[in-house]
Image 1 (tube, rainbow, N blue to C red):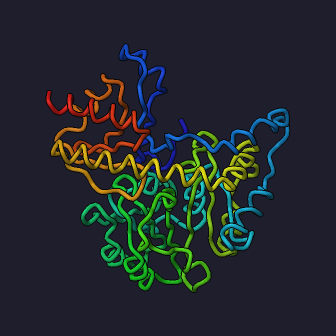
Image 2: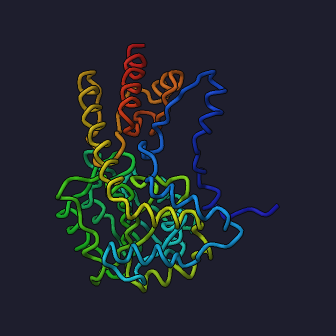
Image 3: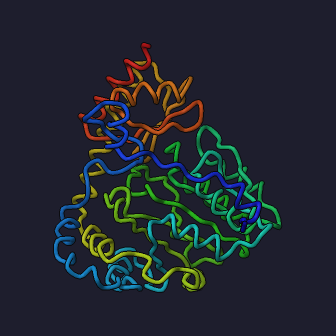
Length: 357
């Protein structure tokens, strides 16, 4: 029987959550709320929904493989060349393409730990080695990551804000790291949650776009734009990097409905503003309630909160039976999405009962 290489066999497949309806059937509950996947509880932009009404009759046609109109609009919004943009089936696909394009077996990639699990999975899938630097105070320690760079290092991954902890790196920290990477490395900056950040000291990755250093900035329409179900994200990099990634990008990798919705959502500044305000209000409420309960939590710059707990399995099981779905993050932590006001209140009520038991 044919078998994959050992480095592929060593990958633990990503385990998605069950469909909400199936979970409710198994537990005998109803009216559950999902606070596990960092989705925008406000929903998609009304402009995006309206844009989807027209093109349904055209789904017998292949999508625009170059995302022509979306690329034009994003180029103007970001003040970058169209040659400096690439689109993917979520930003997740783009980090996978980057790894396949620039890493060879035995090459090293430096990343923080814990961070987005897909980084290490993608590196291992091509026979690369993940060098993981522990977080400091739940935040990427960019100095330690710089110290971990060796002649074998070809990529560095930074999630800013970080998933699952919600922390961010500052301009000074990022500049320090960039001063220590070489022109033979690619720094992948995952900014899936950057629209939620309000801190003015947030690291400026875009300023390195045309420097001698190599950066690939990944962003998505899945989070604040509320289009997670359509799977579309984008990358920003030098045109030479984009050209090389396009060698491995599949034709028609972003579907026509996703492109239409993203183009409309990009114009809806009011939806982005409102989503951010809902998130900030929810954050303040949860901070207050968790503090009053004596619960530990990590202050966040994203749309979720990371909470160290004594036993994540026990807490998760008890919350599930109350119809509140969160994400366990290892044995000693959970991650909860900041929801709508009524969802946040329900989470707190269920958590109080779970902690009392």
